[in-house]
Image (cartoon, rainbow, N blue to C red; front, side, top):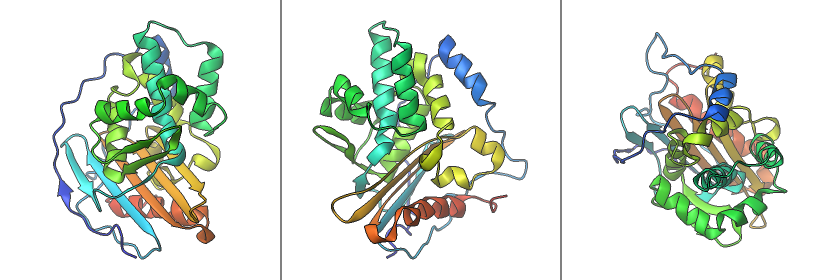
Amino acid sequence: MLAGCSTPAEQKPQNTQQAAAAASEAAASESAAGPAASPSPSGPLFSPTNPVTMNVKGFWSWAFYDLKEDKMYGSTPYTTSDTASMAKAWVAADWLRRQAEQNKQPAAAALQELTRMIRDSETENTFKYHVQNGNLTSIKRMITTCGLTETKGTQNSWSLTQMSARDVARLAKCIGDGRAAGPKWTGWLLNEMRNVRGPGRFGPIEVLPADVQKATAIKNGWLARDDGQWHIACMAVGDGWTIGIMAHYPSTLGKDYGTKTCREVTKQLLTQPPR
């Protein structure tokens, strides 16, 4: 089923804030994460106007946001799928920003829990922070803060949040430019997302050039639900670009079937084959 093979371009300017200078914690994290990737001497890294075609079962959709040109490219722009663990990036961002707004310094134990939530996709404490954020109110805040147009939340669940691929790309931009986590914690959060490890480290990051990988922040979601479907969500934040990819398909096909979709979409968007 060629659910995501169209390549219409969307230009939707958004008035975004410039992220303020990160506080000492964020600055240290940014430094530890390594320098931003330099433009390729051979030209742009991506060609988002090229067709992206695959013959796969189920639903899939992609979006590429060129931040320098403020242009969105992609397929099936209004269709949504659920985020699963990808939404943990917003849970952490919303909690940290609100702590800073209240002039509170998170305890070291809380930061350790957030680190495991992002890097290892640990779920144990996620609902605790989601409830502290206001539950469904937090998802509604994400929609308004990040200028999302198709996203819908579900009470008592961050993982069932419905998002289109282009809203995922917008959320990635919102995280990268500082609106999501705020000026104090954006650098810290991006560093955690650059250090995702274990079963959550898949998708776009696997096929990017090695130097670009170091500067790319990611958060993915993956879950076989009771509806008989695997739900896969991929989000990446790079230097001047973001990517959002959503998919769901029969659970008998396994997780790797969906992670391959995220890899293949990214490979087809690259101007050069992965090295």
